[in-house]
Image (cartoon, rainbow, N blue to C red; front, side, top):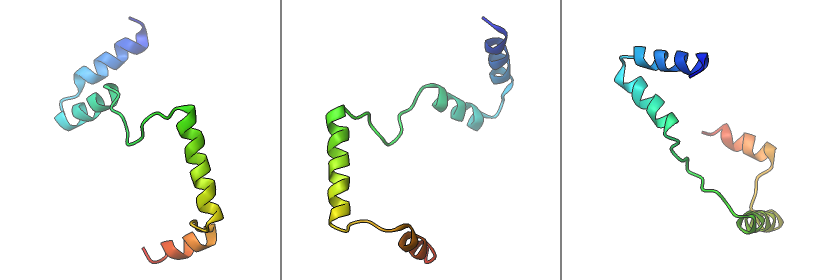
Length: 72
């Protein structure tokens, strides 16, 4: 075990706040986010779909988005 690993172990061992420990555990166990890995084929399909949406005008310009966000 190197110095960094030892320091990490000591820092975690010193934590007594269960909420902090739970947060650290969640980070360390590698919980997956809302996104799943995509295959190359899925990725290309998503890009094609996005391009089609742009062609159909199903998008906002930055200016329009800023105006819309003023109402949030």
